[in-house]
Image (tube, rainbow, N blue to C red; front, side, top):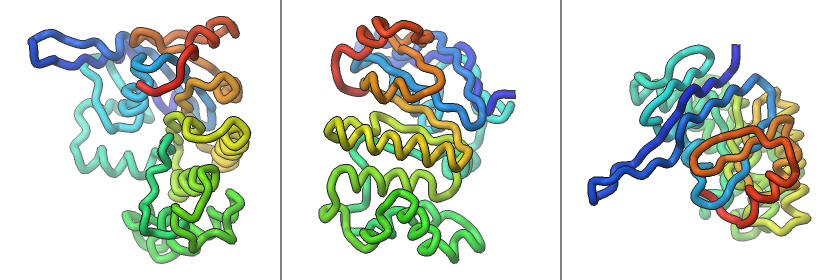
Length: 242
């Protein structure tokens, strides 16, 4: 059984003029535990919308989304929120760190919603995660004192601190230079694999997409397997997110 299963997922938005804007159409995707999948596409292709649906931040207009075989369409808000915090870790393009909190405090933030031992050990766990991403010596620095690559490493540590089963990365190298981006992406892939977590990477970058075991193209809201480098080039002709 797949960890995640999307069948016929569509997402439409009603516009003020009464028309309907299709964002996703008939998306099918299965994700196994520990698998790395990448999705590439042009700006406006629906990549970020798909990632939001996967992470229970948004709901489809049509189709079925199964999480561990359980339908997600009728989840109560509290259970949806709990699953989002326990099952998923998120890495974003712009880091999304709390500016007045240290690196350790940012990494520990998700553990404020944990219980028992996980809550009580939150700083120790955060420091251990920062050591894993090579930032143990920078634990007490605020984000503005860190480079872009260091900030994204903090974000990766934060995404993994609750040992999620799935990490969803939305353009994780988009705000970084090529060399730093390659280092950060290699770290993300390695860290998620060590945790046994599945990884879904939304990207425009060919080298980032190539790290995944399976690659897909999202074009016009439709998802299809990527099997040729020419298709990758066409899908990544411009930068940006949906």
